[in-house]
Image (cartoon, rainbow, N blue to C red; front, top):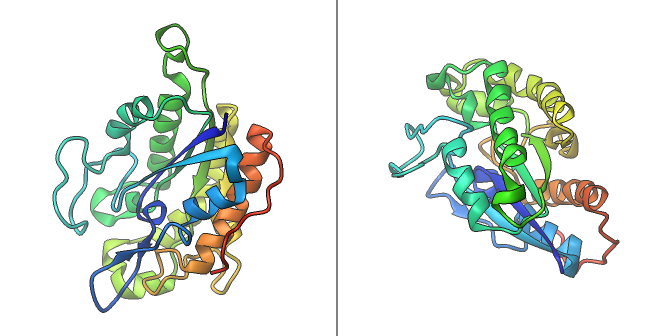
Length: 240
């Protein structure tokens, strides 16, 4: 049976194409990092995409994020339990969130954001899988998001006050959260080596470019192979 892997995130998991001159669109599956991940892991894995633009760790915040989303809305903490149940069985859960939590209007410090990630980690790892559900507990991979830099601040700095510093602090804090819970960790910024290194290279300075999606997929594939003992696979995955 293929390993079932849930990828839970925001617009960069959705595959949002940043466009400064018109409505944003979505990259096709073979470009998105989740689609590339599926190609890299091959028939041994099934990738489940759960990306939502504007999603935060624990705030239902819609200002600047388009239309109001009813129910759990943009709050990852409120949506995650039902999301887990709807996709069982799961062998691994990947969570990449935190960028939207740096919006000035939320007033979240980097410590607050890491605490929010810890809450989501505890939902995954603390769910009463045994006894209540006849499924094994999934492994967990926490991913710190790309850095926010001067390109983003030049476009929307008032909405992301102090975000460059906060974004660079998250990797160390997320790593600590993962270590304390016997989970795995990946720093997305280390995958994005083009200048400016560590940042997303879409035109808005916050969303991934095609090349970024490819690099993140490669790094995630290696980490998931380590986590789940997956074999090597030669992907039919086009270059960005």
